[in-house]
Length: 432
Image (tube, rainbow, N blue to C red; front, side, top):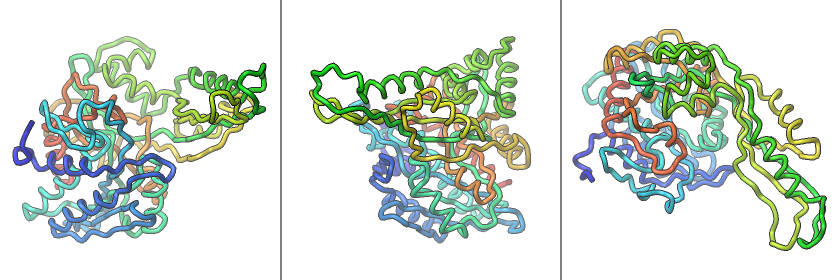
């Protein structure tokens, strides 16, 4: 294990952020981001910037600072991250998920991938520039949100509603889940995120008659719910390509030399990233939780299931209607949270700048657009007309299942990938 002084600054900052347990359990239950936001604020102050904080709900803290650019007539660029993380069950990990362990050339911990790595890359790339006495080309708005892992309900959505002036003058934004490398056969490529599927979190409610567990009891809410969950969870949604995923499939096919015309088969050429990419070709409806009963010998009168639905942009209503048909009319659907899907062109000055920055640090490696199956705070910023991209640049080992670590066990990121990403981001903000 490396001593702290041996670590590059970007890894030290990411490690420090991991050590703040900012677990977000969802639906308003969270440890809170306050200490992590104060750390970020102190770092920004050390660069001569003036951070502002917004804590609309106790401990759900957001922080921002603006970096003046050389050309204030150009629209500002938002670099944003979130400070919360999903829960980690320590017993399932080989290291303490909140210790920030360094071993095998990697930084381990909850948030190492999602997304305290990018938070650290944003901070240190701006630090590189300002400490050198330079300015970015345009104003930069550095913003770190609370509650992203709960859809931004207590974070970015409230900032957009109550602190829109933080983002004044911005037209584009960069955040997580893009810019990282994948292995396509023996070749390397980078995925640049230009879209996100829509998110719809629902609960399925089944009701029946309560009774003794020993009874012949066909009107059983648990049975009814189980049948609905199984039917929905096993539904194979059809492939529906968008303009982005068509470009993705075409680029993967060309890079791998495959002649297959089935998108799933083409995605298989991306190895460990294939499952991540296949989810972008279709709607997904995954059961993620069950709640029913209170004693072994009591049949309850109600049972509830949590379902995570991700649809292609604009398909939310159609999919909800289809879900109702699948589970049956005797199951009530409650929409818990819903947000929009996004898709912007893989074109324009910022895209060219991101592709160019990667090319200067990893020459000759193609950059491919993709539509992410999950979501980011770019959705909230879209309400202000800000076009969002995923660009957290990481050059990764071909055998590392990076996409499998999002919300996974033993989350980790190579330290040299963090250094690579810091350099690429510094290059980008200096020139764009």
